[in-house]
View 1 (tube, each protein chain N blue to C red):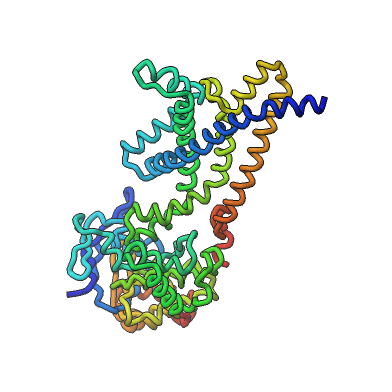
View 2 (view 1 turned 45 degrees about the vertical axis):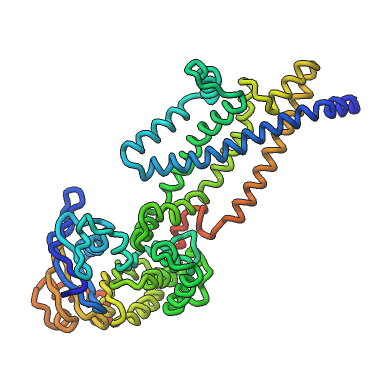
Length: 231
Length: 251
């Protein structure tokens, strides 16, 4: 029984690894693209004029108010009818990036707004323009404050990337389902898949935690030390 | 021509008129202290001068240039007007050294090594040479405020505006900050909003008493403390004197 399972595992391994590669590709590209999109959207919401702010709010609400699956269907099945055709992988990368950008924007916006207004006043009073103030004073603090929420987003994305199997992306869940359907060993295969996701999640949480510690600065990201003010 | 000229500044927040026409001038290297009851527009006046809150009406002139003119590049002007905040507002993510050097690096475009050397000098001047690599959260209130003063000084400003620089400090930490400010007298123009009457009396070239959004009276410390013309000035200084003892010997 045990050797039988080991054999099954070894036979499945090449396909699972190739699926895993696509899962990691989806996760890393989307979290990165979503990161930059999120920064732009968050800054637009907080500092933009009425038009820019309105656009950002509209985008974020549209993405957050519709299921990821529907978004992927629109991109993969819908857009071809107006002549825009993506491969499954391209469609999934685009969909996950656009989706993650909206969520990351909201995490970052919360962090930006939690920074005392005096930080901006101090930057401006030195003669920095708004852009320099955001770049050198606001963002370095806001991004650090966002790391815990961002860590969640990474894990969500790692797991939600499995939705891409529905539009035929050969990622981990797709490969698992394919093998299971041909061998009828559903329980073993999906247990294996679950363990792989679990290990990935634990490892990435640990890695992000270490990065967070390396970037940490006393007094930032912790609860507001109001009682320490006069120490 | 005066270095700083403030002409008929008005400022309204919502329906409340905070400043109702304030005018005064300052010369180079002069120390002026603004006193007056809370809520009287003293801090608002400072923020109107460096345009953190642009005034609704009136003009501010620095070195013969009208900085209230919308065409003036306010960022260039702000390099010449230091600001020291009541709540310090140090950049939380930067060490004391970088707090002082960042304006030199990013605004004055001075290369990093030279900027940090200058920052070290300024931090030594305020007595913090051993704290240069500490973050704001690791400094005491008095140390934070001295970093705030060094940050303003490093930009070589024409004038530094102090907005109640010791009001957020524990009493035993106030002295260090006032000593640093005293050491700057005659080296850079300072416009100081404060409740430290002893300090005002000892260091100011002129004291401005504000109430209700206007200047009630201004004069030398001697005139103001011993021979104020307006009854309201005498009453205010009398109350403060009673509160802090013998017209405040502190500072």
